[in-house]
Length: 266
Image 1 (cartoon, helix red, strand yellow):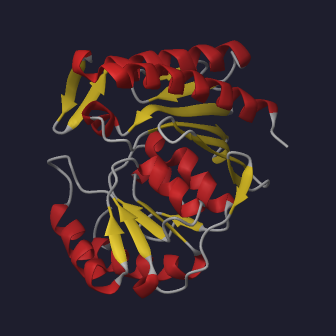
Image 2 (tube, rainbow, N blue to C red; image 1 turned 120 degrees about the vertical axis):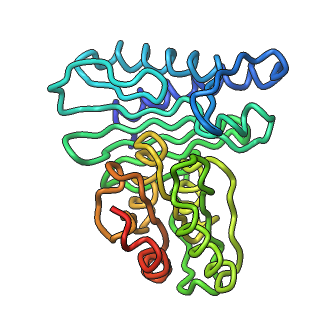
Image 3 (cartoon, rainbow, N blue to C red; image 1 turned 30 degrees about the vertical axis):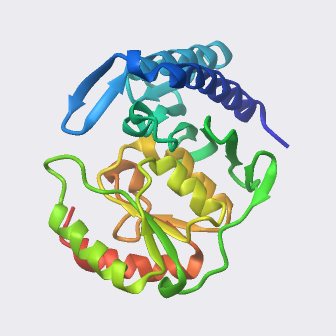
């Protein structure tokens, strides 16, 4: 059964998806601003975040909200914090590359308790409530049953900021390219994690992410029977932006490869 908070998140995600789908027909007129190297925000990101925030604040005015575009709003001492990415994969969206999503998570104290990742292109909505499993369009999903890296399809994210640790990434990428069934970089971490939860990917790893990139997706994986940590095998991924997710047995093998090359990164 859906909880009232999950239903509110679904309402907000659907409102954002409607805005995105209308804008997708007129990408040539899109107003885009550059936030940093290979980092962009469009007027649609802003409009989607505004729509999401309005719905969340109307339902839960005492909750705090952390959004990618506008930072933190709401009471500082609230035990509840919504974490939202209005368009995860803005660069894909700008180019008409159909791999982007709306990501909404609710954190209570130090745990993510609700998650929605909505793909407006494929009309797929991934949801999870802590302790109740993960779902795709209402159907229960589970991580894959694969047990070795050699048979696994692994997702990743390429470094795109100038300060990213490119050498460490390339070392891991090179080893995995030789030892896995394949590597995929689709450009939207929330969907990559949702795909791990649904068994479409067997594992995923990426450094230098933000909480809104991974909050919802991390709960999807956990509720689908997978494992999620940072590069040291700890649970600080929301704070340090390093994430590894996967099926229980593939996860450990991927962690060993990544940790070997990122072990000196704090």
